Image (cartoon, rainbow, N blue to C red; front, side, top):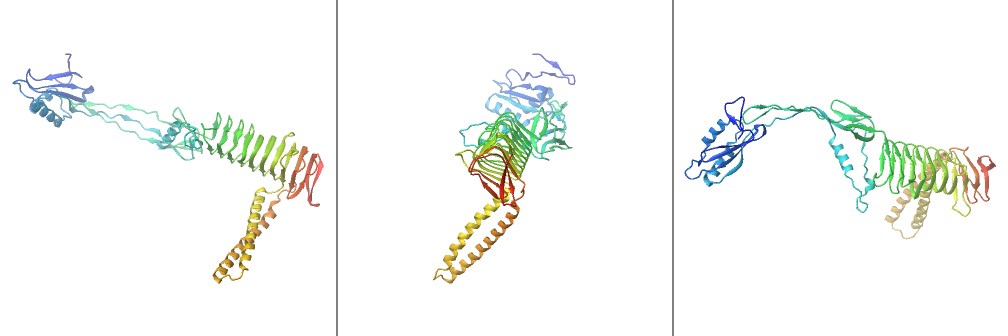
Length: 479
């Protein structure tokens, strides 16, 4: 058996190999040293015939002989000796001494925020099963962070600690330098943390943390993306599938077709294809809208709506203008444009009626209609209540309750009438709005400017329609 002489001792040590101690028939012990002499394991063999048992004193002498002086586990040694000597059983693999492993020193580093890491992990593990009850439209692969949100925390340096082997010799510790993460675009690195400098999409690339102010979706919006809700601009290269909603705190650009369910943005909307809905589809823009066509949608914009080819069976609300190409047709629906409209043509023979409303604040108009409906309901309730109060044989208690109700309904009626009067003053906001049609206007079309209406009875061709305020009518003239 190969042996080596330890430089600091006068005993022979068998590194990582078994060494036996004891006579031929005596109780014996075989020891094995682990790597770096951090542990010593022993197998205990009972005596045979007239051999002597191994005792604690003999163990102490053996341990001294092999220079095991630190971390001795006498409780385990005694338990093993009792088992071996009393029951004449061989006891194997007993840890009789154990040193202390050195503890590695770890340099300080920035560690990804655990909550953020968990959110990313959950999004990465998403699997789509369209037959499952989970609403995958609500699940998004994108991680959105808010301005000031903590992206990473500084893990302070962990000091190292020397170890000690069973011979009592010190074992040096190692030092590691974790790569950690660092702050990139739109982040702020402080002494103890990295935070987002803006609202946006969180991205980690090669341990560099960034926040993108734009969300770019290379493909389509569908089950792979879920609904889109982003605080900045959104750019979508592919189409948007039916049933998926988009909310943008900036502008929205879609390079193909938008199968509209619900889209709300604070900025402009540009759809290179067209916008298709199912009647209840809603699109609201804090800016303007530009697209190829609009079908079966409710569309509202604070600025102008530009539609190249067609608006079909849709309600369009614009605080600017509605402008179409020279061949752009409006067929069915209601168009509200504060500053006017220009299109290739309106309506089609035998088709659904089309109504054009210009020069009015459509929000005030809608509120007026709401109060008008409310006023009609209150008037009917009051009429019925007065009939009941006029009936004979009403007891005093019932009469008093009806009088109280009458008083309350009359107050509500007065408030609704007053609000309608206020709204009427503010509804007409642009008497200079103009409707220009470079093609034909079909019979049955309603055109209204500042609540003065014109119902087209005969086809009109290439006309400009304005408000003749003095005459209290709409006047048309050739383009």
